[in-house]
Length: 467
Image: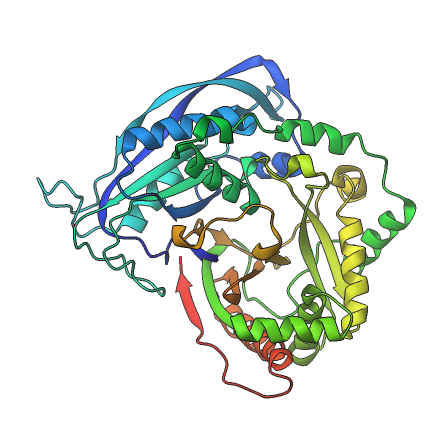
């Protein structure tokens, strides 16, 4: 699977509609708000706060079938039936709601010709999808999620982009989107899988009520307090950054206000090279993640003369019962790799996982919550092959993120059967374009060098997209 962006995702021309259930919140049924939900929703109602997944549906799938299946998905996942609000003091609240069948909205493309029936025109599907999700998948919306359906016209052309065009495939595409407060990337896979199951013949026996994210929030808050060494490790990393979360080690220019994002997607390793990279890691007695961190640490030393320090998101699905649940099961940790030796990076990785396995609110209380600042640097590693939820290759599934303004650097490494690619988001300033670009060049060289045992192949094509 690939991680792309709504400004570059490849979608076919065709008729576009979206479906959302009706949600009626009940303020007599309050639910706990997780630390990360509170941060995200507390930042206010805004566009671009959503995440999505696009996938092919079986040929001939109708709107009525999609609506029935999505009703079933919402019935199975409690977080999709909840609604955020604020109390009189401005604090974020969360309540259960009651869901009922909704309705379809039609979204003709800008400049579409009248009477065509398939939405053909000058506007692009990706523009339309972005506008719909920006308007309706927001923190305080009820609901803050919906499913869009693209029904390709006969012989329709794609929107373009960097990936191969769908090439006239008649199967409709569903794009499932939700505000981030209710989902993470793993959750989107669950939603896609359950939607497909409910479109199938054995739907009634496949999808039942899942564990709720509110139950996870309660369970996490009830866990034992973090030991003193965890508090100490957090303090040492934050103190090294002047009391804030780790920042990108090179200048990013004027960040007095968030800037439009630049998105780069790089194909770093193909399947054969990934296999060689994994073998090198095993020979060193570490996992591929640790070997990649070693490459990152070398890149930081080479380009910035600084150790690798970054925010490091980790999942909190620490029990199997959460594997089929939907919610924000990602918490932030931090990682520091001063020594680029793979075994030292493996030890840093173990520490990072430990730092992210405890409730963050009491740990970060001395800093008044998560001490975020302009220039924050975050790394995410996702190996799709290790997830218990997978989609068939013929669904052509891809994660699609929103387009936003940013003042930090975020890198996702995505590992799948077809290799390793990275996606990077950073602010659109001349300094960031130059400095993040040369840092990524160094990372790509270091990772590929491990895969080819010292050879130096040409780096992959650098594809830059501005939001």
